[in-house]
Amino acid sequence: MTVPARLNVNGAPYSVELDPHVNLLDAVRDAIGLTGSKEGCDDSECGACMMLLDGKPVNSCSYLALQADGRDVTTVEGLAEGDELAPLQRALLEHGGVQCGFCTPGMLISATALLRNNPDPSEEDVRIALSGNLCRCTGYDGIVRAILSAAAAGPAV
Amino acid sequence: MTRTFASAATLEDALDALGSGARPVAGGTDLVVGARQGKASLPEAIVAIDRIDTLGGIADVDGGLRLGALVTHDEIVANRVIRERFTALADASAIVGSHATRAHGTIGGNVMNASPAMDTGGPLLCFGASANLRSASGERALPLEQLWIGPGETAADPRELLVRIDVPAPAPTTGSAYVRLEYRRQMEIAVVGVTAVVRLDAGSVSDACVAITALAPTIRRVSEAEAALIGSDGGDEAIAEAARTAASGSSPITDVRSSAEYRSAMANVIARRAIVVALARARGEHVPIPASAATYASVGGTST
Image (cartoon, rainbow over the protein chains, first blue to last red):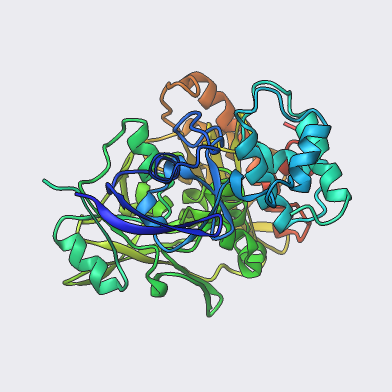
């Protein structure tokens, strides 16, 4: 049996009918069609599926979609202003923080959550905040430098 | 059976749903992950309790704590009273999962999941916490050592919902710490964890609790380790004896995270770190939260 729900994703309302067991990641990717968020481990280990739920980071693979009914969801697609990349996105490109790109949507969301909480983080703060997000390409240094430089350049989120 | 989902607006709605066989979900951080890992499939009937306002909030009641079941780990870490007087609990909540887990994961879910590796369990046990369980037919308070009866198993009836956790006021001059062995800073589960809560009076230890995590089928106190501390001056010899006995009180398993032998060996090390930090805090010294990270560097002259 499906249950009707209304998800507000990146400021736009979507009316969906969902099976009670569907997670937020599948609802956003399959029912709504926003495929930026990725399924890595499906086990809350890797953070590739990270979204913001009412402004707070959530591993969307491990959150029931129906619990997000009426709440505000932000995915990587919601970070840019139209065609203009967000400062964090530009910094990630400039500092070599992207290689295969699979972890990038979750990294960006995780970093956005960090900088909203702590606009002037230390390198240690960044590394701890991102340690729920796995990257198998970059070795993390470029990602950390990008976030620190975006924070130093002024309000990045 | 058809899959159903309801979001309860009130406690009564939730208790009615539990009475009809539904299972509760709050942050989902254990329930959904457990289903993905094949531990247990998701319940056919689910009642979400995360919108029941009366289940939230941290209250200071005569120096003790009243923790609503929906209080998140983030809220615990940010709470000034908990950081100052129930420091081991802040140590624990600060290292649960990642910032995503701490934003949505609740203390109620952590306690009712009854994992022998849960971080907040040892601190709550040592502070003498009890679970307030409610059902359509009444309520009862169960001390946590009676609530946890095995790995993932509680003494609660399926129709009962944990509504809050009550923690009595600790004595003044009490210091506490929770330290775990971890392979990774976030999204980690304790390989071995130890909680120490000590009270100092005129330079000697007048009361102590030592609890072990991920070292037995449930989180439990080790009275021999406590006895080694009580009446002592809290010096190196007493600490070493307490740590040794804490380790010998364990009955660890071998699993994907560690061999039993390694867990036993590390129990001594982690117990020593937790006791050293708890004593330092009881003396009024500042050791940052979480204690686990603080003990990577030398604390109180003990680096191991």
